[in-house]
Amino acid sequence: MRISTNSIYQSGVTRIGNLQSEQAKLQEQISTGRRISSPSDDPVASARALEISSAQSANTKFADTRQTAQLKLNTLESNLTSVTNLLVSTQSTLVGAGNATLSDTERSFMASELKGSLDALIGLANTQDASGNYLYAGFKSSTAPFVANAAGATYAGDSNQQLLQVDSQRQMAVNATGDNVFQGSGNDVFATLSNLVTLLNTPITNAATQAAYNTGISTAIGSLKGSVDNVLNVRADVGAKLNELDNLDTAGSDRALQYSKSLSTLQDTDYASALSEFAKQQTIMEAAQKSFVELSSLSLFKLI
Image (cartoon, rainbow, N blue to C red; front, side):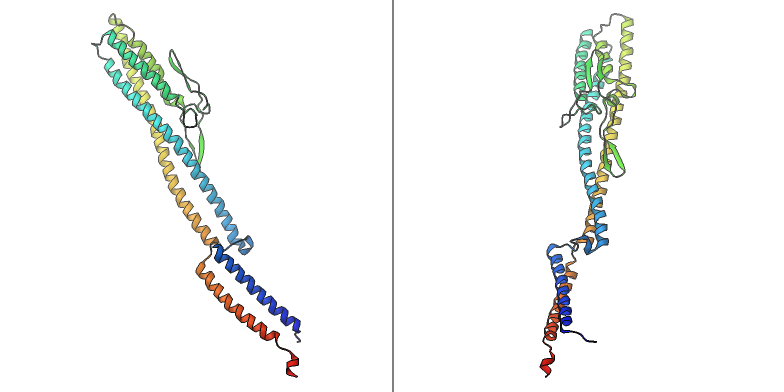
């Protein structure tokens, strides 16, 4: 079979060109640290890397959402702590109000103290967060949830929960509504305090008014205890959610680390392997160039 001089040249040029292309690719991998610069470099690894990148992005978004949830719940927990302290202090005052030796004047002083507690409690119930949203108004976050009146306070918010997607399989309520916190379980704490103020301002003139007073104090003590228990239950729920968010953060961090490792395995350059291959390609290139020079110098005229 005849092989023309042109074919010899073309074959040599093609071989050297392929070697140069392989060297250029290795140089790019070494300089950029990336094994895959385009999907065609490794279609299977590229597809897998795309899947992992998508999961990694979702994991990062969930982590950001958890930070928002933690901020909201910590703000709520802080406010509920203040509410608890106020109600516990009010309980102490209420126990003292049961003293049969108190005069009408002394009871009126207690009434003034409890009126101040009622006003303070309404203030806490109408607390706004750093963004100016009311904590206990549900979806009506731009409207003060409680409006003071002669009976204590009425609720102007709603019962909707603000849900955040804190993980792929977990939606979490990050608010507490005022009707549940302050008027839940049949104990309207504002009405209880308002009735107490009226009761303490009512003079005791005979056995009947004394009996009514004693009954009123006993009823108020029971109602106030129910209100404190209700607030403590809400706080316990908030605390459980904060603990859950911590656990989800830990799991999310572990996933993020695993995603990073998997992407590195798929995309990053193995420098030891790449440098070894580059050295090998250089040797092959030098040999190919020498061979091409020798072949290209061959001619039948040199044999005449």
